[in-house]
Length: 414
Image (cartoon, rainbow, N blue to C red; front, side):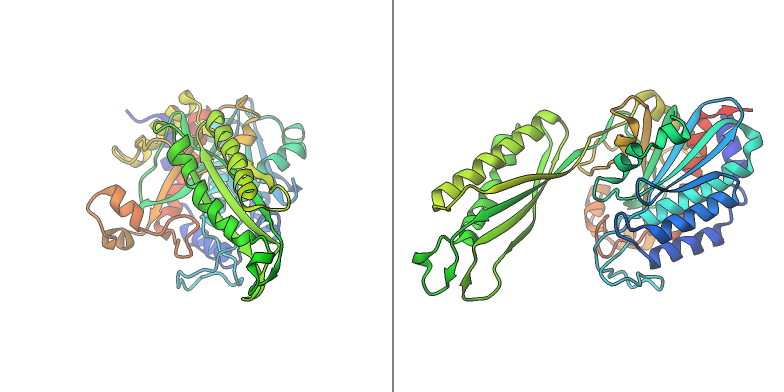
């Protein structure tokens, strides 16, 4: 038997303005904006929310947008979309590709804003079907891990009311039309680490008169690969990536320093601390062995918490998604190594939330990807942060329905 939330969702989204939403998506994709610079994107979202009847505020936490629609007594449900793009040069070849050199919506946040806009408008138009308060949040700076906390620190809940539940979703690779849910740990923690190796610079013809930080950094990069393989238990998930190494200015100059940037992924605080301790020990040891004039500088940067769904909340949302989209479309893939700052909106898990994925790979791209199994093809198609990441437009309407149905499953039915 279909629930009232599923039936109402299908009614409210039966006549979605899909062409207009597609136009919005193309426009956002053409004009990507980096973290905390999402002024145009925020303006587009705020304009649509105001038009739908939301009490709307901009500039929250920098460039954040908040829309509030009070509709009688009932729970307060928050729907969130992140808005920022990435410093990636687009290579999709799309006719609506980025017009900003070196900046691209390579993670689908333009799609998230489009989904949020469509859901907010549909729920506002159908407000006679539910009671409660709807909070709609366009969040800046997810990619740097700053945006959610900045909005909270700027009085998000003091100014607009504390929600009873949070809902969020993310575009992901995979054959369009699937909605992965995990009623528990769904995404990992992430930590950025920067290391500066100090050497003694000099002429390339006289290395004996120098302490070469490039050689030391090379040893360090290699040795760091043993942190996960030799210091973390096989049953504990962890990833250590060296994302950047920089040193020098010319062929024949031994520089005075080398810089290394790391990204860590872990699914527990204990593992994260073990990795950080190992990094500090290894960096100091390699610099000592090389005779560096001083210890390396080790700086902990952006940190993302683990994302852990509230079991009951996620099961309720997953159930309505199964009703709306059909058996087999919702499944539990287990936790991913990706990370999000969405949990910071939950105030250290005091507010329950559900966060899920929407697969977006075009059918033709998926079909021609090498491999016979889903994991093989998943590894072969363009993923988030790829310059070739290009979600299929067919997912715009379903992505609106996921948010609408999730909200209706938690708001009070009329």
